[in-house]
Amino acid sequence: MCIFNTFCKRLQLIAKMKKIVAILFFCFTVVNSNAQLLSWSPLFITDTSSTVTITCDASLGNKGLYNYSPSSDVYVHIGLITSASTSSGDWKHVPSFSTWGSTNAQIQTTYLGNNKWQYTITGGLRTFFGVTDPNEKIYKIAILFRNGSGGNKQTNTDGSDMFVPVYASGGFFARLDAPIRQPLYTPTLVPLSKSIGDTVHIVANTNQNASIALFFNGTQLSTASNVQTASATATIAGSGAQTIIVQANNGTTTASDTSTFFVSSSTSFLPLPTGVVDGINY
Image (cartoon, rainbow, N blue to C red; front, side, top):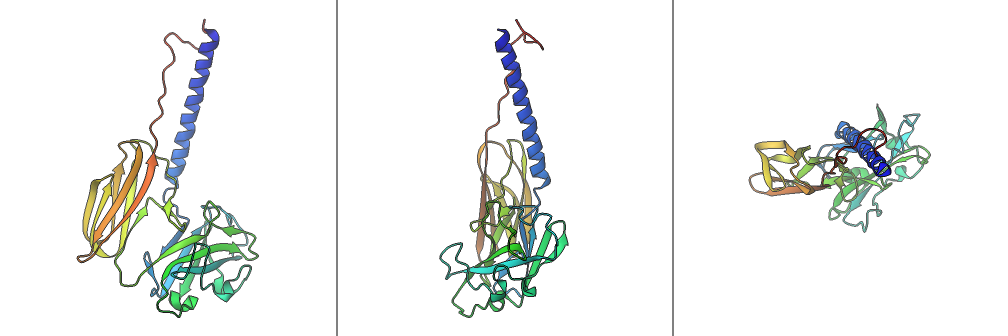
């Protein structure tokens, strides 16, 4: 009986320690929930965008350039995924001055501080990348940030290339931008550590003024008219798959976007048997 009770006490102590670690991890996730590996301007890039700015936060992803010095020795390797590409690795129209290991000033980044580097494309994507076929559609900008020699590179957490979406000129689009997605070839949410009862902040954007409605697990959270940004906060009521949807209408066209994440069922902590006290139990 003594051994059994002592064993139970140890199990309860281990369970409590795990719970504390989980809480600390959750707090870390919340603190960093607004951080984003890649961000860009404009929010909806098209092949007619005159200027495109891409910012990389090296404190995220694989952290290949985290605290890298000298900060001026960071360049981009850049290309396109187009209708002519056959896979995520089939980059098209990589500029000759962007070859790996090149330190050409045309691909040099600007250091913003706090492990953030920024690169700006001017003159429009088709001109910058030399896309001359009007029938070739641009789907994504493929990009890596690296040091001059190419020995250090900033990628996604899994080591894959990073991508920025490019939209068709003149189209109407809606996108969920929070919770944040990883800039993968097929964008997926940054892993969330959420439990039943927690809240989720949701932000959606459109490229034109529209009526925007936000839904969480089939329930409408909010609606706004004649706007390009809408936000809401959802409370997680149960475990399992959680689905976020934005639906937007500009008066003639409806656009939507969906994000999903999973919440596991809560862990049960059972009390010790009646009569157990600190120390040896007989």
